[in-house]
Amino acid sequence: MFIRFGAAACFACLVSHPLDLTKVRMQTTTGINKGALRTAIDIIKNEKFPGIYNGLSASILRQATYSTMRFGAYDKLKLLLSKNGENLSFVKKVICAAVSGCIGGAVGNPADLVMVRMQNDAKLPLELQRNYKNAFHGLYQIIKTEGLKGLTRGMGPNVNRAIFMNSSQVVSYEQFKQFFLETRLFRDDVVIHFLSSFSAGFVATTICSPVDVIKTRIMNSTGTKQGFMIMFASIIRNEGPQALFKGWVPAFVRLTPHTVVTFMVLEQIKNFYDRRIELRIKATTNTAN
Image (cartoon, rainbow, N blue to C red; front, side, top):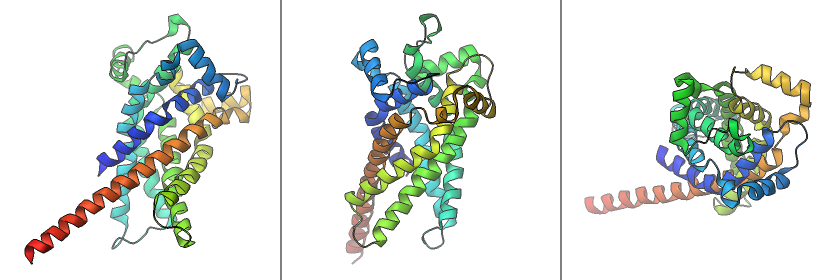
């Protein structure tokens, strides 16, 4: 069960990574941003085309840990709370999503930390660049230079973001899907999967943007750790509230395709899995008869 969630998220990561890289570069820029398109063009200009996939190994590792846990735990918690397979209320879904998001955020934090650093490395002066070769080399270097505790940098805002992300993305997807089905204008097919996941991407981007900016700033920092509230106050004081939505456009352009691909692939895997079970049941029944 957990594997299919991770597989869908990792596949979606291949599509969304360049946009995620653009978002991180914008979020770590203080002052006026150039905009998503200009930032992306500068990355390609300065780092060549392969540069838009900087940190891909860490991004895949992050999805293999973070997304696998948050989706898988959410599914398990729903089964535990539901009676006779009935649909849970909106509040119960949010609770399940928040708890599973917390678990996923904690499990995926080390990979997320490496991903942010790898994505932002080329932007730093040469003497400050970390030059991680891949995700596992990055994990090794962090443990070597900062100790095991270094892997927890940014865990607070990362867990907070994961809670907001899971609650807004997964729950809104299910709610939009339920709404569209109840109109009786749609069937449970790729059309409704696309509409529901696209809508969920918009909701999740908007809700998660402030926490995502703070998380990225903390993870990219060096030296003394800065807490969530300290970083929040610093951004508001020095850059204004609008800075909490830096990178919203690339975040939306990145998260929406990622959400669409993840849920559409996940629905296809689920359908394939359900068909396999039906065929096994039929084969068993025929054998018994």
